[in-house]
Image (cartoon, rainbow, N blue to C red; front, side, top):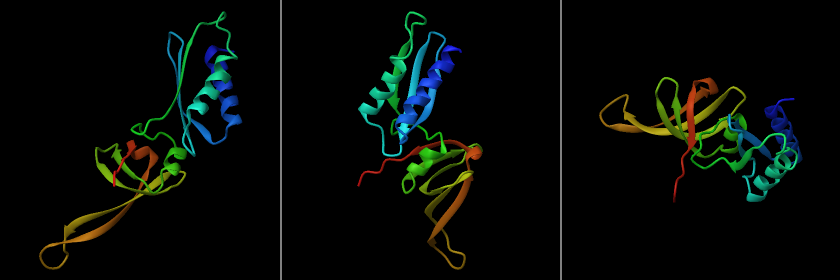
Length: 156
């Protein structure tokens, strides 16, 4: 079993003990620096990070392989990477950059298995007459079309 397989197994064990948490990213560098990024259906607490860190740290032998370990929560400005993160943020405003270079800032209405649904209002020229009118737009975007999606923080 490789070092990475050991870490992945221990991480899975730690996440199985706390099903509200899920893995966003796992990186193991050539110098054996382990970086774990977590998210949770109800957020991630400091204690959650400590618990996952302990499961990994206490079950690896530093005599066998020296390593460093960092366990952190996905930050507010971190891009969304998996479906569970999108589902968690339904109702919030996202800034989505597509593979074609388009940027859409809109409310995340739903997150299905293959795509998300965004809704936003825009001012567009009237179809008849002069001036503009407010139009409600809705669009489905497949996950494969999304280059980056970040939650926009709005202060009221």
